[in-house]
Image 1 (spheres, helix red, strand yellow):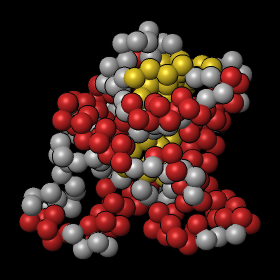
Image 2 (cartoon, helix red, strand yellow):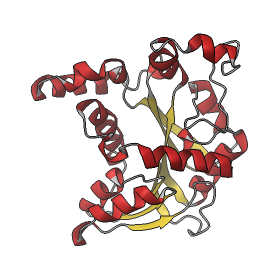
Image 3 (cartoon, rainbow, N blue to C red):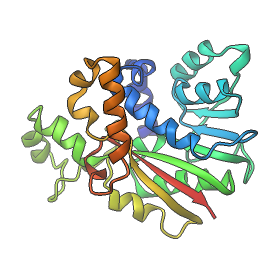
Image 4 (cartoon, rainbow, N blue to C red):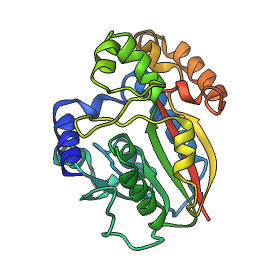
Length: 262
């Protein structure tokens, strides 16, 4: 686990995470996620974001008047997060890990967001522990949002487009059915929709929906970024009209699993 944490910290120390959701192609993921969060938010609810990064979601929700707590592993991200806070959008931030939320009591939050940790957890035990902790701190009938990076979109856009596929196969990084074999030197763990559904089996949750957060967007980043505001808004409406179609889920770069604690 420590090796995985080191890789993640190094990764976020060298990228501009703050900018990731600002370009039009990044806005699709952000706006889609916020749309579904707002479907369940009510006045007075308390929100926890696990793996909050530089605070894009937490600060947006705090500005809307919600009581928000945030957990983030990477000190660099926390520094940027704190620099963005104003008196009107204060968020309680702690440095911590998704697999150990001991700082929070059982059934504390109405809404729990885990929009990054599953990207970086490679073994089944760690994924289950993160899921268990997110469930534990969420009130009964509360809503849990968990984001995943998907296998097929990543293989198409990186392994095939960049033509690393031959070397990746030679190194044993791909299974016979072309599933990326996550290892401790990777920054990202990749999932398929059947694995996401299997992960929650046996836990006190029911699935409300599994959403394609960015759908086809990342296949055409440059084209989406170049759209006029009017065309982009129309594209976003199109995206929302198809993002719940389960036949398209596996092709999305990111998915959003929406669970209710029972």
